[in-house]
Amino acid sequence: MAGQQYDAIVVGSGISGGWAAKELTEKGLKVLMLERGRNIEHIKDYVNANKESWDFPHHGGRTQQMIQDYPVLKRDYPLNETNLDFWCVDKDHPYVETKRFDWFRGYHVGGRSLMWGRQSYRWSDLDFEANAKDGYGVDWPVRYKEIAPWYDYVEKFAGISGNRDGIDVLPDGQFLPPMDLTCVEKDVAARLQKIYNGSRHLIIGRTANITVPHGGRPGCQFRNKCWLGCPFGGYFSTQSSTLPAAMATGKLTLRPFSIVTEIKYDKDKKRATGVMVLDAETNKTIEYSAKIIFVNASTLNSTWLLMNSATDVWEGGLGSSSDALGKNLMDHHLGIGAGGVVEGYEDQYTFGRRANGFYIPRYRNVGDDKRDYVRGFGYQGGGTRQGWQHEVAEFSIGGQFKDAMTEPGVWTLGMGGFGEMLPDPTNKVTLDKNVKDKWGLNVLNIDCELKDNELKMRKDIIADAQEMLEKAGVKNVSARDGDGTPGRGIHEMGTARMGRDPKTSVLNGNNQVWDAPNVFVTDGAFMTSASCVNPSLTYMAFTARAAEFAVNELKKGNL
Image 1 (tube, rainbow, N blue to C red):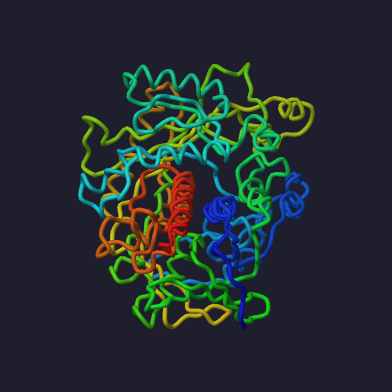
Image 2 (cartoon, rainbow, N blue to C red):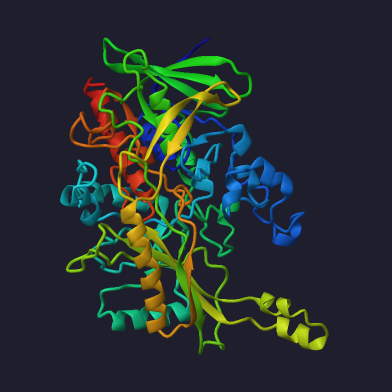
């Protein structure tokens, strides 16, 4: 079945796909954005956004049926009834785990931009130069100075609140006014500064929650219900931000229920000509043509699409000529940290429900600090006052119990580490030839695990967290040594990395597939290393940069 001709096709509608659609349409291109899942309209389809726990049949928890239907999602916190419709049904979207990998997916318009943690940090040259300096992976083809203007650009549009802290490893950005640290966070921050002679910093998180009206959005209401969808547009998502901008141009066509199965490739012209789409509802096949294609289906699905394309030219798929396609899968390893009780602030409380926490930037293997592993980690955490539930465990009755419930509990402060995972070619994905999904498509086989470097780092993450809290005067400190299974950071990266050499990378420094320069990959798949900060802001910056390059090359007749 023949389709239509477009200037550009964007595969996927999440954070990077939304940005690609916005940038390409605003530069005058006629764009088709394809999303494999259903449509979700801003505000109208946030059906649970104004509900409290008592409004849900199971108070926001999980049922046995949910556990049965979501065998992957049940492994961690995402499985609950509050936003269940935002997560794909695991049993309908299988994958094979040679080694366990917790793959949490959102198949709908907006993707995981509706559920993301919104922490937004710039990389520094410490990150962009790491591979070249310590020899892991391949060298990044860009440096901070090249991407810094694009960080500026996307921050200004998205709306990132934060404080300009002047920390070398964590460059400042174009911030809206920051949220406040709580009283106990301010206390611990000051103590850490003094104890560690200014080498460790506890700062307010830099988050894509807007603190003042911005871009026609009124701002964060301090409800902390972000992952239910925000009727106020209080945080950056495709629905609240990039999609309206793209639609306003009159040049965007959005097609949900569209599974892109193949990028069509002309081996004589060495260019892609379009995509094949399987309608998820009718199972009909449609071909769409375009001059350029942006692949933004999320890291692993983007790599799946490349692997499923141009197999008559390259057995391993489009972009496989280097043998790098599918390799060097990364995530952030977490599940470890420490927490305790802070005394002395019983006369103070918090304002609202802050949809943010504090951040402690990386300090290991920085400057003169040298460890028995490479790279480093940061911490995310929060200091808050416990609610009335502290009395429930007592099973008290009568007046005393009622009185106790009117008083908040103790102040607690906890933090968890986010550690960098090294690029390693043995951490990989392949197409499984034996297992197919409900549409008859071969699924991914994921073979990924933490290696020795990550395991050594995890020991430091726990020990340092405990030490910092104890030295800062936090009481009853207890360490947490939890599950570090890759995938549960929900920051999957790599498998179609950029580089300087087509023999060792899938993409060049402009996010172009070496084998097909009119195909761009700008989601997490392009990442050459992982840093230890949340990656989404970097996807935004590289997507905007690649879009400008693509349009300019198109105008020159090079694509």
